[in-house]
Image (cartoon, rainbow, N blue to C red):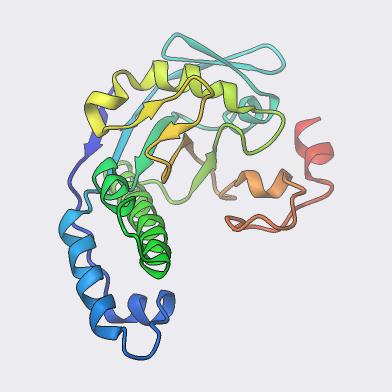
Length: 224
């Protein structure tokens, strides 16, 4: 199965994005422009993905490339999928190391926003690649730790499928199953005409990353 590595993606923040995300104080526009230029020069967003075969196992398990995952939601979501795409996407360790240095609180705030934008750029670049390479109309996505059914500990088998993630894109899985760099996400994509997101099963109301509203009856209708 094919492995995709997108490295050293060029981060460019168009004027529309700068106006949307940054609100410079009076007299700081020049400093902001200089800061953004430095960030663009340093940033190296990356993504790693594998096209993977799988087997459905029992009520709540899936075996991907010989590695066992436990999740009823994942198992049901893959029932009508022809393949799965385990992935990691990151804003890059280069940007995180650089962003940790500003002493100015406002500059630290700018750096945090830029790191988030770099991660978003890596995700979009990977999704565009998958859509073009595999002619997938719409992707569903699941991320370990997003719902109780698929806890963060499932990062371990995910990284086992992906191989040497640190050597490929500089992402390290910590003993607590969080990742470094911080602005990193991981999970499994799969073809899905409904575009499943874990948000549909998440009750948390104040989640800044929510992309879909919680569907109260979905679990009973589809996954029970």
